[in-house]
Each structure stands twice: as structure tokens, then as C-alpha cells.
Image (cartoon, rainbow over all chains, first blue to last red; front, side, top):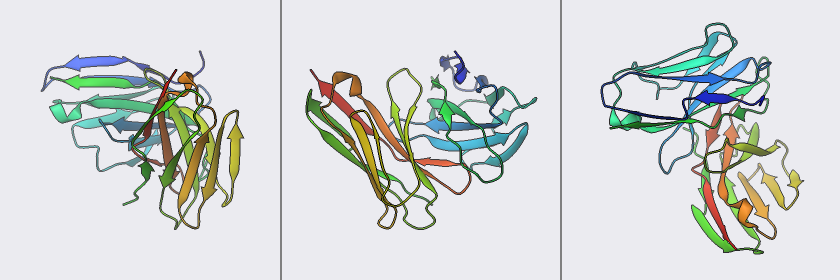
Length: 116
Length: 111
């Protein structure tokens, strides 16, 4: 399967614990995005990378959230000291592009986080 | 703050019915609009990317139109089938890359 993959697909954790999610983009894609979807809402942008550089972060991304893409390939999203409000679907997407051009974003199946 | 609105929030139709959904978005600084279909436990699947005012796109029984001057897009499904059951998301593309999504329309087709 050459699509975007995300692991784990589901994560249940207790409040205060740290969690880390992984995203493997389509191999030739240089751009990688993280979105979060909470119940009844559409996905909301969190951050995006071009290669290994994190180019934009949403105000939604509090200090407890950190994302990395160390070699410009896979990415990790870590949430420290989880809170119940962090319960959501975390989606990763990738695309191929340069400059300000828009290219279609391909999504993974998401990681559903439940914080008890 | 960009606001993308979708209506209705949910829709239940019988197999064979035709249906349509609306996506409203800011008409200024339009760059592009994306429609996605998202089935439970799967990845959101791209349906259309629309860029030009008056665009009409079609894929099988699904089609979409775009009016950038008034800030809306319609998605039509002709002869709905149970496999069309999904959440349909539209996303406004800000200059560059960021997708700003509506809350989606949940479609359930009963056989």
C-alpha cells in the first residue's frame, strides 16, 4: 500500500500521560500536514512541514504539543500531559509541492485518541 | 478567521434518491476548494479540486459546481446508493497549502 499510513489507529490513555503518534507519508511527498478533528467539527489545521522544516503552527498547537519530521520522511506528533480535551481524531496528510503552489493533500486513516 | 459552512449537517435518503449538499466559503481571496468523502475507519478520499468560477466537475454519479463570486459550491449525488454513505467534507484552500474544513455533511443511504 503506497498511501499515507498512521500508527497507532487507536490510542486510549489516562489524563496526564504522554502519547506519540507516527505518520508515514507517500514516499515522494515533501510536504506533511497534521490536522485534528473533534466531534461534530471538521478537521482543523495543526502544523505543516516542508521536508524537515516546520513552516507553520496553528495557535491550536499548545506548548504540550510537539511535532517533528527529522529526516524529511516520517513525522511524529507528541502530546505531553494529555488532557481530556485532547481526545480527537488526529489526521496526517502529505502532498508534493514547492513555493505557494497547491497540490492535492492525501490523507491517512487517522489516529483516534481517547483520554480518560 | 475563515469560516466554511456546510449544510445540511446530516441527511438520510432512500436508495435511488438524488441529493445535494452546500458548502459556503469566503468569496474574497479565493484560491481553491476541495471536496472529500470520508467513510468510517478509512482515509478521507479526494473527490474534486475546484479552482475556477463556474467550474463543473463530475465523477460517475457525483458532480460539483463552484461559484466563487458568491462563495458557494454544490455537491450532487444522482441515484444514491448505500455505498455513498459517508461524511462529505469541503475544504477552502488558503493561499498556499492550509485546508480550512467545514464540519461536513453526514449522508446515510437506506436500501
